[in-house]
Length: 85
Image 1 (cartoon, rainbow, N blue to C red):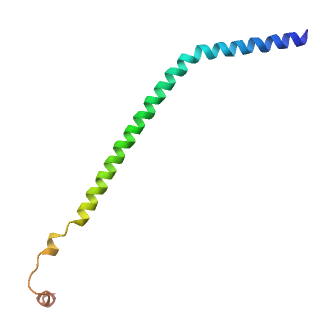
Image 2: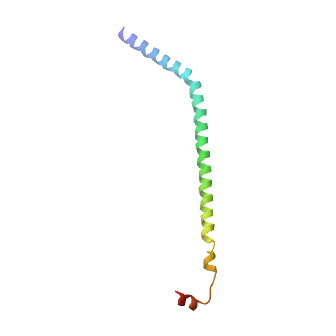
Image 3: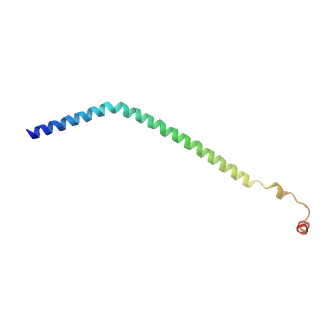
């Protein structure tokens, strides 16, 4: 009799857990869609940030290639500049 009650209890618990799983399935679907949207939004933010970083890097590279206007201006011969210092 004890084994019968334990077996019956196990079957009842499995049915209760299966019922909860069926009832929670729509919630899991909604959570899956929400999680997909959140991850997509985070990826979008990361891509925008990376594009901005790349743009700033390219701007810095172009600024480093530009010659300085002060270096291009020559005032006399190199000997005159050394005598003035």
